[in-house]
Amino acid sequence: MSATIESRVLEWLAAREGEMLAELEAMVNTDGGSYDKAGVDAVGAQVKAFFQRHGVEVETLPQERFGDCIRAVLPGTEEGAAEGNARRNIVLMGHRDTVFPKGEPERRPFRVENGIAYGPGVCDMKAGLVMNMFVMAAFKAAGGAPGPLVGLFTGDEEIGSPEGRPVIESEARRARVVFNSEPGRANGGVVTGRKGGVFMVVDIEGRAAHSGGNFEAGISAIGELAQKVTAIHALTDLNRGITLNVGLVSGGQSVNTVAPYAQLQIDLRYVEPADREEVMGKIHAIVERSYVPGTRATLTVRGEFLPLTQTPAAAKVFKMYQAAAAESGLSITGEFSGGCADSGFTAAVGAPTLCSVGPVGGKAHSPEEYMEVGTMVPRAQALARAILRLDQAGL
Image (cartoon, one colour):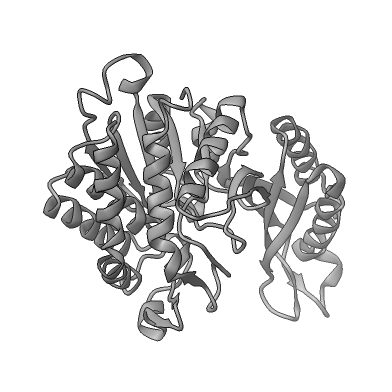
């Protein structure tokens, strides 16, 4: 791509901070918890309207239970997409859903104080969505991208992408590279590796009985739960990066009834793919064992993320992005995160992937979630420069 197109892209982005903030404010002030399909789709409508205004082709991939997937496409120029790998898609990815309950934007709407933006989902990851939108619009305004540029906006990442995963994997299989615009780390870094995660529910059946008059006839599901929690937590191996957390428990009928049912919810995190099968085998054994005779238990996997592992090609993407960001005045480091993201799915099907290239922010999933306004334009310019350096980097 010519230096003229690069300068046009960078100059176009440099003048857009105010517009970016306006889009971000509207997005943050729209409800969008993962289970609120109407809210997530309302954010999707905003994304579609933006691309339509900027002349970028956009389509909706309908989903049944959760937010629809939005896919925007900017064809590559003849110069940039002449041969081979350059014809494959350059994918900018992000999720529209948040973890917050209905009404959260009304309780604490978007605001900016001293250069810091606040609000539900402001950094995780609505700022990254806005950045991706403007990067694509910048290439459209400048005359094209060095190969097909695809913006993928999904709707159920916070619950493990149960519907979005097949869409993400399909897109990644034909991708030249994937940039996932999760928030940049608090130190400005990006993420080159992530843990995998499995989110499970165990339902336990016991037998009810009066706790005073007929105690011996009861079979306590809560007693069984206590034993299973202890056994599950004992599987944690910090040296291997394996953690087990039973984060939610419930059960029982009344204080004077031997508990006929109980439930526990498990969060498993791991680093190496082989560790998943080992630990899941041990969890299944714990679930199948009756510590309290007469109880029965069933396990259901509710969501799952694959680990993001850095392949040689992904390492080249990181080095190339690092150099491109330096031209935008940013000093970028790569780090490993215990958190999970959709980037694990793209990496697992072979797409060179870099995560957390979005604007810098922190304290996600909390009332203190924030995003540094001054990082929006430089991070957008860094991403644009990286897109323009793919050929140069041999990617």
